[in-house]
Length: 490
Ligand code: BG6
Image 1: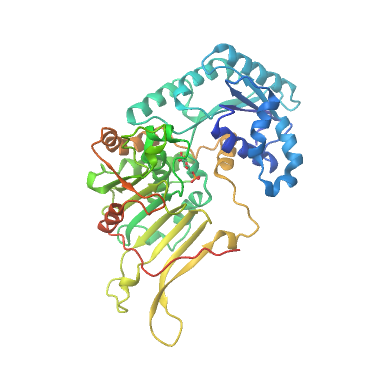
Image 2: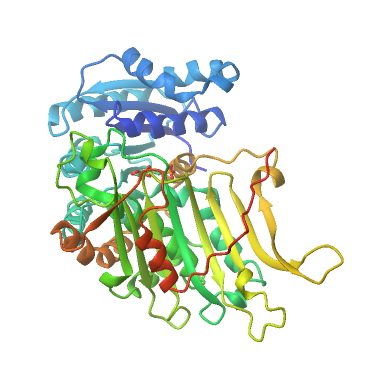
């Protein structure tokens, strides 16, 4: 492990992302001993003219919840002391020179520094300011020590709005920093069960021979939220559910479900395979898309009255390779739905030559529940216990809360930020991956933006438009009737 001073600079320090995700993740890392107080210093940078203390007050409430507040009081005050605030505009030399000065002073003051310096810039900012901010960082704030260290930048989606704007952004940032310095976060890659995908697929003999078009009928990757765009209407209306969830989070999950086995676990080997899958996706057909917009979405004053922006979408992707030809990958995401959950559903084909006549009861389905209540369960047909020979749907269930009672599952951001410090890019999106992802959705997005593909209304708190269920059926998904999986309560 590296030593020496570590400066973490959160740009956009008083924004929502910083308050809700970045600082809490940093605090949790600190609390668990991953950030050494002898080495680390945290800087907040933003436009508003506030003091160190005012920034600390703004974020304090987000760092601990009431349940564990008392256990963490000591760590909390130590952590807050590590935070300094520098104010300045996002495009002026003067502000960034001051920031550099503050970082350098800290580097010198650290006994362990010995000249080396690690500088991590976290851009919790709207993408419109990425180019000026990256320029300023490059010009004034990069690590200048010849004794080692590095400068890295962390960026968040949205990375552009379509292929062209994304590529433009990539070249602007790419002209300033090398790819190994750039960490594009997709926080779904930090979720426990997403990180488990490779292990599950490639370390289990059970799955290897089944994971293909001969056995799998369809794959669904589903995201639902039971609330609407709540106060983010302005942002959301420009992007819509495909850019907000599907093109990034669900597509990243698809890569891990569908990719071939990488040569090794080296980040580049894994990312090479992800790119190949994305490049094998064939253009999306209009008849394999259903868009929805929940009723009441346009009541938000920041949303135009004639908005066609989808808050729900089901799209079917088809991968043209030897493993997957003919298998629909159904990506579905929606806001203001009946429940809040995200899961991956692998549905197997019917048993050939069935002698139990039980097929209308349901197929084998392997479900990976990303959230809430992390779990994996395999729906099986078993003999109904009792005297009669009847079949029934049941499951093999690995529910994390029950199986791993003493383990607390880290937040996605905690893991990912730790990776940026350690220099591991496996769970970050590479430039060519991003490009391939945009290539898949850009034609459809342009047609939606022009109003050529329309969103149909659906009721808040519903399953989304009925057309989406019809599309699923047409794609061959068979819903199991009379069976529900009940997450164990503890
Ligand atoms: C964000 C989206 O990337 O992911 C939000 O912009 C969404 O719209 C959020 O609510 C969901 O994240 P999670 O981790 O709660 O599933």
